[in-house]
Length: 373
Image 1 (cartoon, rainbow, N blue to C red):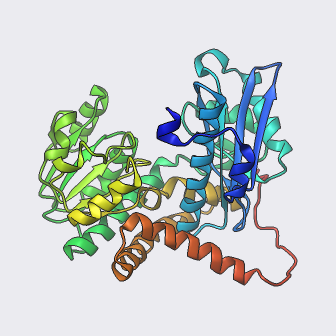
Image 2: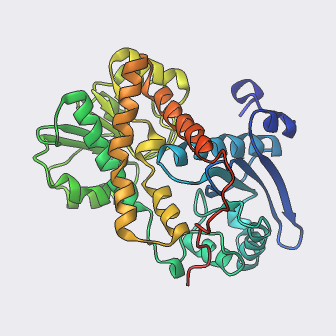
């Protein structure tokens, strides 16, 4: 990643001038733990965001990544209607070389030292076992067995499904997926979980692809009528919904001219390679369901774990993704802007409204039940 491509900077205080609340460098020489935490915004509540473990080429690159991701979590959490802010942590180094019980217990002690300003969990190269080790030392980690919320995949799939319904309602004027063609790019755990919803509809056709042969076989066994296509051919399939559910940046200069779809709606993160690609979709008349809104089921699961898990309430919040997207589509139409911009506006407006609600002093209630036995 070059300076030209990412505008990287080592000037930490420049980030605070741009609205980031706090950037923390941490290191444990005994275990080799080294990383950066960025707390972007806590106006809605304590910040929440996963931990990413990656062998960055430089501290500069790690700083750029953690700040970008933390800001994204603020918007994601606000747009989902959650009373939490955004943060992210990156651990620097080779996961294959550094991972151990003592490594993650030392990281858990670091998280505990922040006193509840951040709540973290899985992201790239962080497993459930890693979180279990962290949980031995901190109250502020999600995705562990004692808290009972279960896999985030379940609600991510449900949220993506109801998001598809919202997009179809907006673009095609339909209340279901009957006679709709969907092209899935990636058929991992989220799409596999979605199959039970897909089977409720008389879908015209499903195209799918994945680079993992085992996932291809499993999805084919779950949805026998689905048609496999090669990974580089999925973009050109004529469909109503193109659903990216794997890597990010798949909507770019090379792929946009190939698209033959009305809607883009999927669970992948950072679908647009650059913001200008969101404008390009808008100009082509393709409705884009912003990824950080439609795939918010996972963080919704985590949030409800934070406040004391209630399955019915978590499902209801996830179902509200439908309404959030309809609000975004309305803003986009009223202001003649792409949906990715409308999603940012929705998040910013919610933060502003909640700050006005909290303009006078009231003794804070104890909302977050961190120690769940």
